[in-house]
Image (cartoon, rainbow, N blue to C red):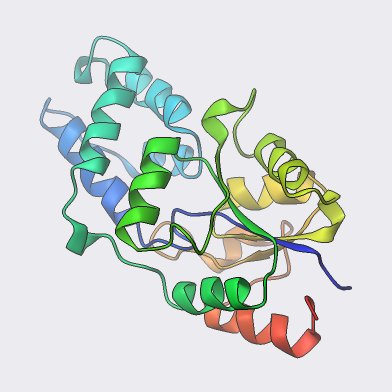
Length: 222
């Protein structure tokens, strides 16, 4: 089935940022004497910053006086990271440049705030390569709800079923599939394992090099 547009998640898919989120989160939470448990972290992977902040506030109320303040601390921490820590995931540069060279309509649809999306894209030099970038912070519901993917498809001017979504997380994969898109998932094994996607999505890939090879081989955007 040919597609008309390519939609990228960002964190854990294009950018190796999940370890950075974890670094910022641990520093913020554990300075108050808490232990940041895997259960709490796992429950927040792929969610919007405001939703993550509500989870943190529920479990670690001493971190800040409100979820909104926690969100501010996260934003400050993420945008203060040195440029050398912000790295692309394997194959990200190649698939982005391929999409640009082939004039494939493309966009980012991320759970991150717009400020963090813009910061990472700028640090990696992708401003012109991915000109359309959308944040779930402006949607009624974040991933795993389909809102951000439906919005992005509308902005690109294509029906959801004509869009190929690329994701790394369970929440993101569920969101893309709920929107009616085909989703190719490249699990970020820093926070998940392949078996987590059993019964959710069979289209799993080792990295974005494999995704690009498949796109070329099947002539999806020819």
